[in-house]
Length: 138
Image (cartoon, rainbow, N blue to C red; front, side):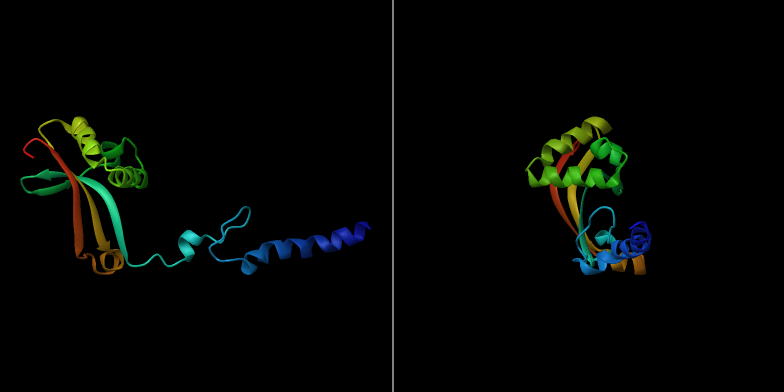
């Protein structure tokens, strides 16, 4: 009986390792991952929810800390996206101005761009949808 167990252990391990090949590629489970976030086509055009500072010379990027009180860019974007979805972009805008200073101008917006062109060519056309503007001079 013990020899059977010893002989079957490598077979069982091999089946376990190869089992993701039999599953749907978007199925991501423990302990073996198919890494669908890297393995599936996400498309070329993406929308990024963000906030920027409006200046006399154009626009300045704000850090995730100023936008949403976090060091994580993805969490800041999710915070903006959720505020837009809930119709609270103006509230978020005012919170950002409070962190920056009342004389600063902020724009909460969604930028849609071709990320492949941006990666390959270094620039890409973008579409900007403004959800809220606030602060000094707005």
